[in-house]
Length: 406
Ligand SMILES: Cc1cc2nc3c(=O)[nH]c(=O)nc-3n(C[C@H](O)[C@H](O)[C@H](O)COP(=O)(O)OP(=O)(O)OC[C@H]3O[C@@H](n4cnc5c(N)ncnc54)[C@H](O)[C@@H]3O)c2cc1C
Image 1: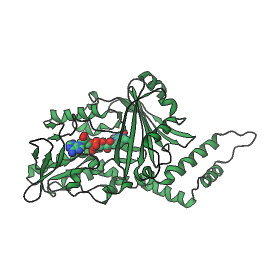
Image 2: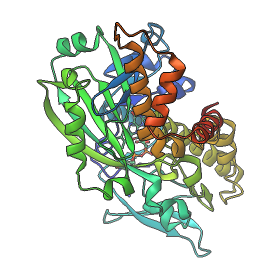
Image 3: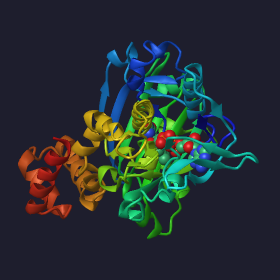
Image 4: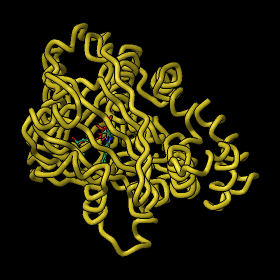
């Protein structure tokens, strides 16, 4: 049984906008023929912003515009509704407009289902899979949360505006056709608050947003919508969004610290999946949570089915869950990139390097005849000093970068 507090699956879910559905290959080959997406991402840019400069690494490929595709922009109400329909077609019972209020326990104290807000609302179950998102009340009540959950520095708040523009205007501005789409990830542009930004193309809307480190946001006076307004006013972004109408504004917490903040994932009669288990991968150039939520849900379901067949739904009987996570990208990506969130949100990566890189590029391409071109090494040295980056810091960060992403 799938329980959803919203009126339909996807009605409550918020994210930036890009899904990576290849995990569905095993259940629904050719899923791309029916999945309700907006655009297939064929162009992916990484943009470094300072107050007055922008540098973009822009990549595009036709390969991502044809099966089996790579990522796609999609509206969660469409995508999650479709996915829940697939689960129903495969035999699951979907119960909407129903909130799980807490856990049921048997005489031995083992988790044995959930209480809901329906009058006859106790649902007895041998296994509960808590996938109730970041701040999971169920995982907390099961005592699975650790210190990672109470540390504000492990969270960012993501805020997003959906901006309506005619499809032909979006096609023209972003240099795409038909169902081709663009994903722009932004470093800088968050008004001095550590975090990042994004801009994605839907068919006839844009998603523009920022993710902001919670303590840094709280330590300054500006509100997230003011920070988005400044991002939209930046010379590199304004021509892309101008004339659009804001049709939606939304915000949501992101468990940003990955592996280091994950709670315990298994207890007698219960598993934790998706954002409830802090499985969102937020590592600078990657912001992926939906695929991790889908995959961990699949592996939790498989492990639960194995445990039920074996007649042992204790933590030991459910151990197949963590084994599956550990054998696949879910924990492997998190393990590999476990240092990345800290590095990406550090002050030097957020503020000093963007300034240094932008200044170096500005000087390399500035033609100041009759003066001859300065040497590249000299420019880098001068700009490194101007940005206040010591050689030792540079070496340390380079090594951290290799260890984080290498
Ligand atoms: C601004 C922003 C941008 C992002 N961009 C991306 C992106 O581009 N791509 C990407 O892959 N990820 C992105 N993410 C991360 C992504 O949103 C999450 O990782 C993903 O939604 C996690 O899925 P989930 O199902 O675990 O949790 P959620 O999406 O939070 O879903 C939890 C579900 O449980 C339901 N629920 C909660 N409590 C109860 C209860 N007590 N009873 C019944 N139902 C309940 C909710 O209604 C909801 O449907 C972004 C996040 C943010 C905030």
